[in-house]
Amino acid sequence: MHSVSIIGAGPAGLMAAEVIATSGIRVDVYDAMPSVGRKFLMAGKGGLNLTHSEPLAPFLAQYGARRAQVEPWLAAFGPEALRAWAHTLGVETFIGSSGRVFPKDMKAAPLLRTWLHRLRATGVAFHMRHRWQGWNDDGALQFHTPQGVININADVTLLALGGGSWARLGSDGAWTALLATRGINIAPLRPANCGFDCAWSEHLRTRYAGHPVKSVVASFTDDLGTTHRQPGECIITENGIEGGVIYGLSAPLRDTIAKHNGATLYLDLAPGRDLPRLTRDLSSSRGKRSLSNHLQNKAGIAGVKAGLLREAASATDLADPARLAKLIKTLPLKLTAPRPLDEAISSAGGVAFDALNEHLMLCALPGVFCAGEMLDWEAPTGGYLLTACFASGRVAGAGVVEWLRAAR
Image (cartoon, rainbow, N blue to C red; front, side, top):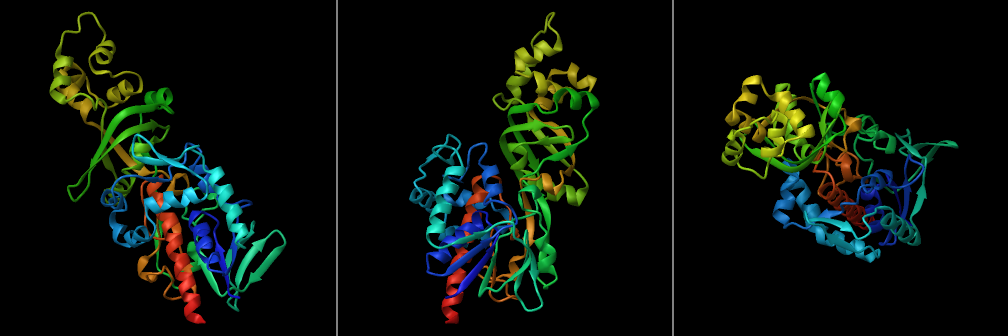
């Protein structure tokens, strides 16, 4: 019987294991961590955003420059197929008000437990605390284990090693050196879905670090003149800013900072009020009210929003209702650098697509396939990222099955 070694027990590796094992092929899954799916479980802590319900065209647009590469994966296993697959595990899903899709219990652990039970029932064997060290001189896979170094021979190897973020959960990017020594083209790993540094004043840092900034719209215009807009919330940190609206814009912001040593992001602190109305409201007489009370009463600006406004405003801005209104609608934030890779939710970069065939097999290493976040693509956190990870595992798994059938 043929045997397949899958290295990496995240969503992509597990999905590949399911496809291969249900084809009657022996599958062994290896992972450096003590347990399976650690990053997947962490992603589900705030409510597992499994996928999205929007039409396919805007869904595909979330993959930016890698849309053409990701689109065939989603044609084979897209958002609806992912929901149907979850239902086969007894996991019912629902569409939230934002169009995001969640399990009804909002948790990742029940889905993972049921999935692992089904995988084991199909014969998939799991080997934990096995850290891959590449290949030995005879071409066998080499692992460091609690029992020492072991060598494993397999007919096919599928790598699903994750990116370079959250090293404590297993995605440390150490595999890049192992593949680079084999001549595989690897794009440098970079932070994605990340926060950014911003040179706050000591006052703002000490008073507002950790405070959420709710109901804002962030916008940014890239070098091509495309304006990116993201509504939602963000959080002030000691070093800068992070959160949903920032993660959604992190790719163009990161790339602009790399090119120009900085980028300016604009926050609309009062998205429910247009500029003429806001100007009129702020132009009304303050009477004996303080400016702080006037801002709260007429513009809904208080707390951390007021702190951000004062951080950017000059005395002239604060005294002029028109200038103040414009600043509230387009508050500039100077971002100086993305936060380090290990702090990011995910990573960009990885195995270049020109190193792979359409089945995600390495052209230079026949019989070695890759899937998941270790490939050179990125997407916004949550459903977009997870859907493509699952789908790439399906594609790579099907590629393994086809490769082994052709080898008979």
